Image (cartoon, rainbow, N blue to C red):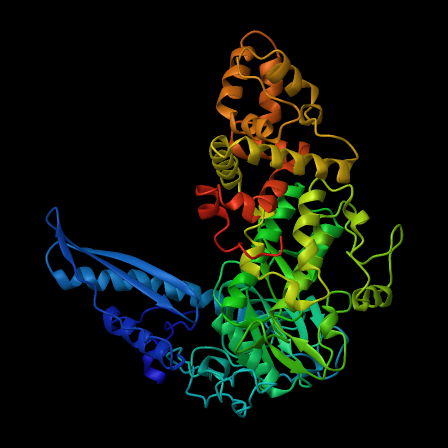
Length: 626
């Protein structure tokens, strides 16, 4: 539909709306052209003429339009004193002007893109080396003459997924994968004539830099690039990759939309029948962030684990098994959000628990569950859970050690694999000993890193563990427990104190004296010299819970002291102004308190006396492994 695109300006220097063209009609044609590249299951773009309304004696119209090629939402406003439709025309004209400005930027990028020299160089993949061609001349009006569309690769043949338990994917990928370039005003790949640039255009909207490689895996290389005006990562799928694996990855990427899953943007085939997938561009990956110490605090690392867990929960609800979770496949965006990436060997299954069988060992050494490390392996949700546990252990251990790494030395991948395979080999918990979350982490990871898949909890149960709680949820739990144990009876409270003391002897070889675990400033000024009449028992777990609960009382005291001396300021520096700093203090000073309560109060003898706590915190965890 050559006429559907507004022509170039008479000078031939760029895109603009030609004199005499109706902006409303032009925008309708643009929308219709977009519809040609939609997948069958995608809604069609319906462009409606903006409806102008009278405001203060002037017709005002607003035009909104989303262009898939640019991956951008446009908005324009038009006004007219006399004719209502003129306001609509001006609104559409404003949208078109911005759109054509973007088109000119894209064309400048295309002019930067090159056709590689005839002699291959190591930096440029051979698949992209095509002989340069002379650019075609434009007509006297500045409009490029009609050209036949570039050759398009045949659609992939219909192939079922790997096992009988897996769902069969659609026979062909969507039109967006092989969308032909039918716009006569866009340069074809044969027109890249600027030597010295590393920017290459695939076909229509995807560009990549051949000398900026972000990573490499079994499915192909990943480069930095652009999708329209948006920076992105561009994955080149190697020719050795079987068609059904390609279909699986593209289909899974198109299916998934979540804030903690790397987003799919577009897919194109070049003239050499290479497939290129454009995806969101992360600034870093977790492995590099940890190695280079590019994180603000351990709390930030814990947030990355929470993000990863949320992404994994979404995958499993969508019945997708990732199969290759590891730190380098967790991408970091803007320094504060983690997203799961690389779905090259992922599978869609009928049951996330049962999964499917495979005769191939697929995954990354040191990060695979024991059941996948055999020639008769099995992939399923519990395998992802095991890998997630390894990632948490590695991320949160003080020296970033692997769960099955031998003490005081860096174990080889072979040693790690053997230790994972050995059913009698437990995680090396001493690698967590110096972590400020060691008790909570051991409680969390013990069932997750079980060598028996059926013993591993599901991801939604895992995310209910206190390790992932916000400060708000931590405080709610403490408040609910405190209120309900008041009425639980002396027998229940004594039993709870006895179990807590037993834990203290086992873990720390001492009886409970939680006051001595607090720093001197807190102990002196909020306990020993407190003006509040309440007395807290250093050997009682219930008293500890009440002390944590009484934040408002403590804050009143340290605010009063701040007027007279530096004590209030020192306390304020410890606890901060919000709940997060206050909760973090107790998580670090008395880290075993909440994990102990969380686990112990799930026992039947305690659940009988708990109403609100059970309702709020244990609904899905009644039969959990924690």
